[in-house]
Each structure stands twice: as C-alpha cells, then as structure tokens.
Amino acid sequence: MPVTAEPSVRPEAAARAPIPFADLDAQRRRLGSRLDAAIARVLAHGRYIMGPEVAELEAQLSAFCSARHAITCASGTDALVLGMMAQGIGPGDAVLMPSFTFVATAEPVAWLGAVPVFVDVLEGTFNLDPASLERGIRTAKAEGLHPRAAIAVDLFGQPADYHAIEAICARHGLWLMADAAQSFGATYRGHHVGRLAPLTATSSCVELSETPVPSMIAVSPDTLVTRMGADALPEVESATRPV
Ligand SMILES: Cc1ncc(COP(=O)(O)O)c(C=O)c1O
Image (cartoon, rainbow, N blue to C red; front, side, top):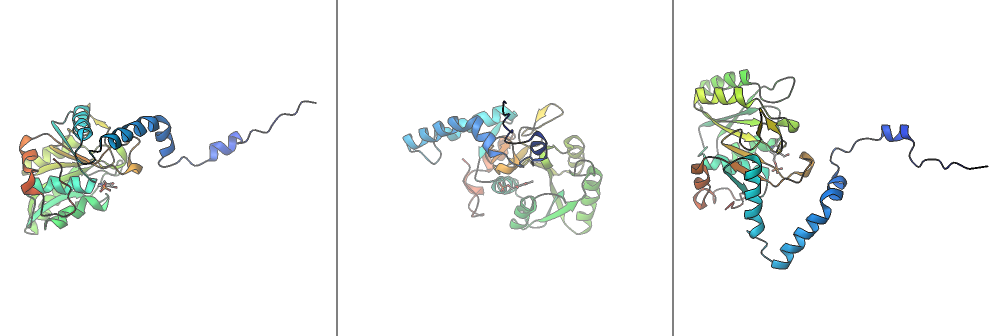
C-alpha cells in the first residue's frame, strides 16, 4: 500500500505563521551575491572613506528621486541635524512636527537650542494634520518663539500631505523639511520622496525599508548644499562630514 508523506508544514499552520516585520533573508536571497561582490571590490581597492562608490551611489540616489543632490551620511538623525544646521535653526526658533514620530525627529531641534512644537496627526494616516499645523504656528508665536521650519514625517511608508503642508509653510514663511526615514521609494502625486521638500532626510535603519537604503540627505537648492560645507559641521560632534 502506498504511503503518503505528511507535508512538513501543514497549509493551515503556514497560514497562521507570523509574517516577519523585516525579512532580511528575503533581501539577502535577492541581493546577496551583488552585495558580496561590491564589498569585495572595496576591500580590494582599500579606499574605505569617500571612495569612488560614494560618489556613484550619491549620483544614482539623486537620479532615482529627482533631487538635485544626494549627500550620504551616517544616520537619519545626522541627516536631520545637518539639514537644520544648514538652515541656521537655533535658539528662539520653533520647529513644528507631528506628535507621532520617532524621537530622532525632535532630538536634533533640541540639540540646536530650538524648540520642537508638536502638532496633531490625521486619524487615517498618522501623518501631520495640516489644520493642526496652523494652530501650532499660532501657539509657537504666542509662546514668544519664531516659527522657522516644519518637518513632515512620512510614517509607515506613506508620504504626508505635502500639497497642503507646503501651502501653509509658504503662507507663514516656514522652511519645509521631509523626514523620510520610513518612506524612501514611495511616491506622492507622481513624485518620488526626495523631491517633495527642499531637503529630505532618509535612514538606513533596515527595519524601516524593504530595500537597503543609505542614510542620506536629498537636497535641491544649491545654496543649502554649499552651507553643508566645513563651516556648518564642527558644532555637532555626531555629525558626519557629508562631502
Ligand atoms: C521617523 C524617523 N525619523 C528619523 C529616524 C532616525 O533614523 P536613524 O535611526 O538612522 O538615526 C527614524 C529611525 O527609526 C525614524 O523612524
């Protein structure tokens, strides 16, 4: 009599198996051999710091997201602080941001002596609520602060409502910055994250993205890139020299 082998994983058990939050094995299966070859190339030429791969990566990243420049750096936190330093954020300034985000959105504001002002988020997306941004600007002024900038955070891969946020920033003279630590690769109204604001910070935190993304700043205004030169950097020790 023929014997049928039990399948090692029953279909119903497979259906109940948890889906991994970050499946790095899948990434490794798809990209592993190319990553190994790239690492071997760097070991062979030995230019570990600012080697040719850095410029190549930055060129590919800026082309991908249609920003004029991409500057790689050590972390999403560094990307955020470098952007704010380049914009001269400092004591007396208020930087508005959603109350539901990772601590690194607010942390660099405090490092620079400015005040993070938290505004509400939308129920459907958990991203910044534009109506609350208007109220937050009024609150900041009432507290004697100078509202200088707003940070739109793209939570869980979904870009914030840049159209509405940008209009409010323009009306109140606020500089808009994108915290895209969780959204690089996404699009909004046909445009890639990276060109939705004058400056965008991304993170290499592997749990946040399906593809390996370096921490970087995608910048469009040339003036900001110039300001990210040597003069802007020594004040914050953790900041990595970007260019
Ligand atoms: C929304 C958000 N902003 C900023 C960061 C900071 O990125 P990093 O951990 O690379 O400094 C993170 C990281 O989790 C994040 O989720």
